Length: 419
Image (cartoon, rainbow, N blue to C red):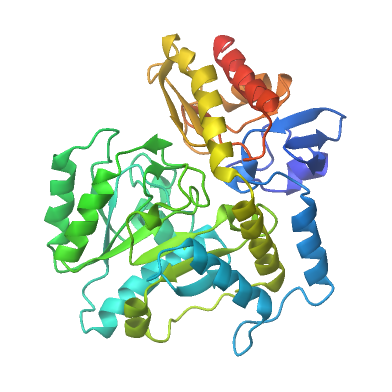
């Protein structure tokens, strides 16, 4: 493990690492086995991807069958059945007008592609001044350059790079209850002649603060985008595939461009997609983007198998079950003076600690939670969570058993009690 500490740069961390990373030697279902023999319940679904848990026999089978044929071929000038079959499976899940699929390497890249689509769309219509994006504050859309530009410029993790990024247009973050004044802010910006699109994470702002908001904002913004002829982009990378209790928010309010990823391959391989309408694709024509590993056959095969697994599972009932247990077990924390708010939606449980806690900063991402202290506590209770800023949260696999979910809740409550 000394090699890891000295030579392997982990996300949002310094090198050499300030603390030793836990070594995983195997994973099955909802649990990790560590090199020291301990076992941890995974409350993070490996950053919200492993919705079916680990080592699932049907997903393993799909991977093994494809790898014996071929793992990858370039997608330029070639195609293959895994990409075609995955495309067919995706279109069954989405509104009928979202039927043009661009496969990407990762969620961040799908955002980059969506933004390039929007800019090229207006350029081809002779309006090349339309290259700005309107978005909510407290959003998070990825770590690549244009994706960073639509993340929160002040309180987000990318403020260091703010002077190097394109300057986008931000409005007040949406609230739990609908506030018309925020929609009015949006309309004031959509009237500008340089706006290409409005982009947001529908219903849930993820890594920007794990906040939930009223769907009425999206209903009103959709109307405004239509009124002012502005494209609408939804980032459902973190929350798609049922995490909120809805398969996709896009099935309720249809955007012009949709970005998906994370749970697409159930945590097996990196793959994402940017999906749009015929109107957009016909205007864009040749999209100037081509990832080397675009439509990787191995990833596409696993993704299709994951969608089939999701469709035949009782995922909706499982998400409701998870939501009910999280509400029952965690709502009591609102009585704790260290806790500002408990937020539960679908298979997402968030505990926001009070703003005025005297806690040390984590230099890795300019956040305010003593990550080491909280992590050591939950790990000592047999659970893996990854807190950030002043947030301790869980997004477990959909297949998690009640007893394991209650153990996650117990570990959370213990960590806060002993903070």
